[in-house]
Length: 103
Image 1 (cartoon, rainbow, N blue to C red):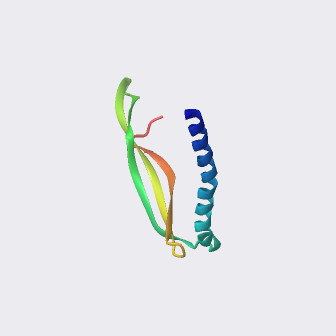
Image 2 (image 1 turned 180 degrees about the vertical axis):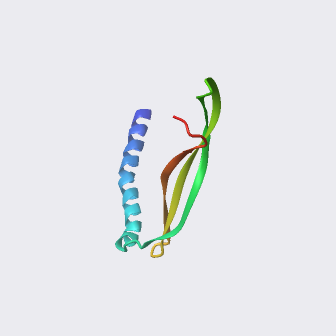
Image 3 (image 1 turned 120 degrees about the horizontal axis):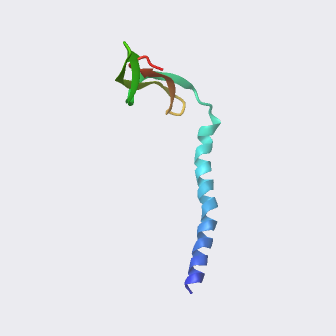
């Protein structure tokens, strides 16, 4: 008896999924007919602290240790579409910055 109920329940669920997907595509057809008008809304550059590491170097025949701060420089650009009232953003990695020069 339980097996029959489980099978019937799964069958009803599978039959209902295509209608749910159809309903979703029907509501978005109107928006897809118009092309987007993306314009740059804002541009922001940030430096994010990502941690430290120690490195060794030689000075006057003596070995020394120093801590280096590591940062990442990223740029975020926000775009706005006035036709659909949508926004989108993209973030670009620009460079890694070390507080001390070392190899």
